[in-house]
Length: 181
Image 1: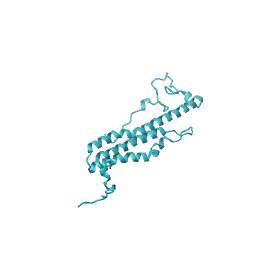
Image 2 (image 1 turned 90 degrees about the vertical axis):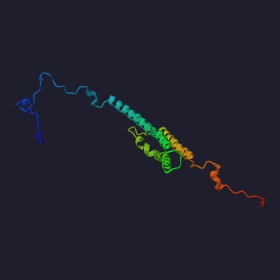
Image 3 (image 1 turned 90 degrees about the horizontal axis):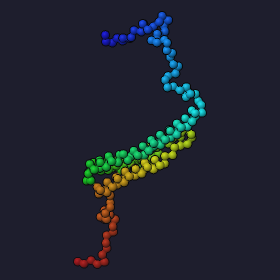
């Protein structure tokens, strides 16, 4: 019948005293679960050495995570290159927006490098900070590569003043000594 709960009938397993029967009374129930080592439940010198090794394991894990964070911007460079190729080299609103995104994303990342690595650099139990300078340098270098790609894209589109004709407004006009009519 819908809406009613059906419970299993446990009365044949109950003894008159209220305790449950077991199928085999000859076997004793082990006190500890299979695989349990009682020596790990108390603090002893081997446990302290395991704590030190867990600290070093935590440091290596945080260092690996920092390398993943540092290499993250490099994974987006191929997608940005594909988007730039798809938008073309003509000066249009879409290609300018794509180029602006290619330039601004790495610049924002470079400005926020300390906030990016702050959770991984926190002080651990030993009292010292994890040194992430190499990871930060790699992060900044990859983002600088992204900025250089954006500048290259601006040059291809003709938006950078690279020719002498781009500076004609700043070249003084020639003054002639003689004028002939």
